[in-house]
Image (cartoon, rainbow, N blue to C red; front, side, top):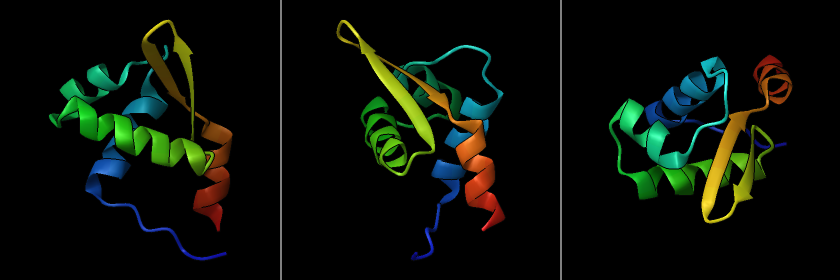
Length: 77
């Protein structure tokens, strides 16, 4: 498996979502770490394809939360 390199924005998003008690919207995540909501949405989709985040659509809203088990497993490698 090739090594995946996360930049500071990806790491900050994972940190914020790992500590959140409830699922968050990309807009909420973007506001928290001061990035554009579209950037947050693209990165959330990327990390969900890697299995680090889980998201579900509720109407026209996307709710996202960290998959803590997958993050720990990925960090051990």
